[in-house]
Length: 538
Image: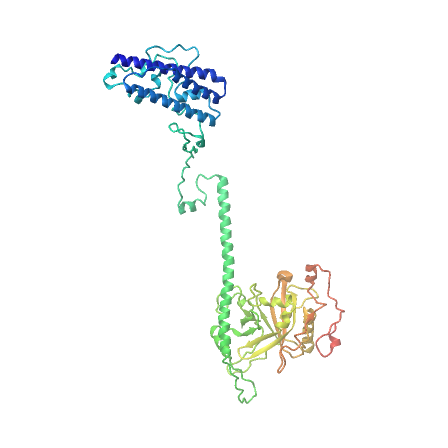
């Protein structure tokens, strides 16, 4: 039985060798033809070789089954490769043989040796074990002993990954089923970045300052950065403190004045009494009691309806104390409104009698704040044509009496003027005589921005509001002049038909500063105050 098996084995080996040789010759013949035609030629050659070999199946049957399996596998692999060749034109005939496990031998290679199966190299171990009985396993020749020594490197089966051409995922075909299959995506490996250690807040903060090892340029950069940060912080503090101060000042003033006017609502008419010397007795107003409890330097209250001006009026022994001080004594940029320290305004003794006559011209000072606190809203008389007609009356209360003044002039002065346009009206607190009075009020009328029909007579008590103005830079001052409303007089009389002054007498610096070339015309028509109008026309 062993002899029959060996004969059958030798016959099968020869048959396989003849098939392989025929395939190799077909590949060498078709090497110059297109790849697709070469593959089809190989397939035809294999089919012819398979049909030509008519060798009876040896015994036992397992050997025939193994041969049939080998032929089926080879035919499937050829069909699979032909399909892939048709899809990928870049494949070569050599790659077909390598995939089939049939590498092309040189043309001058010697014929297949007898009794040595050439295909042993290409039969997997598990296939060889199918047709080699266990009890005759000692007759099996190991693979490395059956092959002759060759100078070339051994040929590996087609499943070697390095020798396969790259096939895109959408063109891949399963070798077992012949159907397309997906291959794993070939994504380039991303280089992992080394994670930086997070710095603590302390390390980041210290990093802002020059460190040992920093270059000179880096130290300079850090120094400039720190200086810039310091400037920003300081400026932010100054601006923030400024607006916070304005807010606090406004809040304090609002609280004080609300309480003042609330108490004034309780005010009743004072009794005149029968005084032997017929002198008027002054009684403290209800609202004044509240203010004097806060500060004994309060001399009154000023108010212009429907404007931000609604403030207590202070008077110290100088004109600087309340420039930056509130009624409460707190330091504040807006300060308070204050009466010139040389003025006399309802100064009353313990018995309620006036100590002296009031000044002819009361002068009240105040800052021109941007948020219109203090006298900040007075600039509207200069800028808004209708503002005067809407706000012509000033309420001024002393600690004992309530007064009303109507505005008759408002103008701009140069506080440093030393030319013929000089007019220090805030210095004139009392008048020597009638001429001195009319000289003063007519000079104001020449300078007023708007003319009106308010009449001014000798003996009228005057009120001057004094604040800064930017029209002349730091030297500019805005002056608002008003006279006391007479008993039984309409406070609005003469204030509702104002017109722009066509010939304003500006300070000399105004013409230089503005560069308009326009000057004051002293010969222009002018209607002065006073009974002798001709004597005033100068």
